[in-house]
Amino acid sequence: MTMPAVSLVTIGLSVAGLVVVAFCAFKVYLGVRRFGRELDRARARLEPKHAVLRDELRDLQEARAARDSGDGVRSS
Image 1 (cartoon, helix red, strand yellow):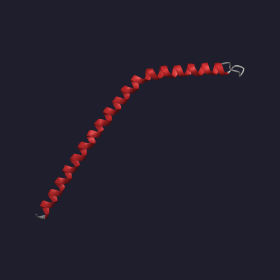
Image 2: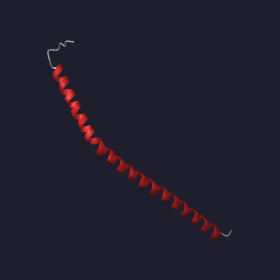
Image 3: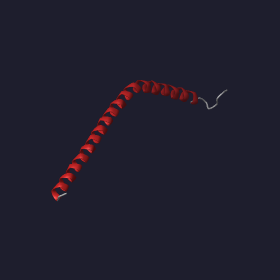
Image 4: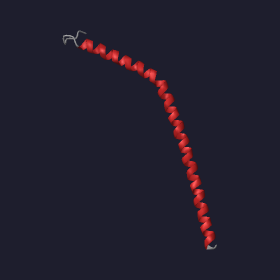
């Protein structure tokens, strides 16, 4: 092979490699975007349940504080 032919083959293989890398990067981009949408949907579904649990925890903490603020003696 002559020198220009070797150069053309090298350039062609380099371009083909870059195309493969670009395709893989695009697939990763699409996957990350889809994953972000799934996280948003999960957050939207869990937020009402999280609020209910937070309210229940606050109620339990208030009940415990009221119970423990007595004279320090607990009867069983």
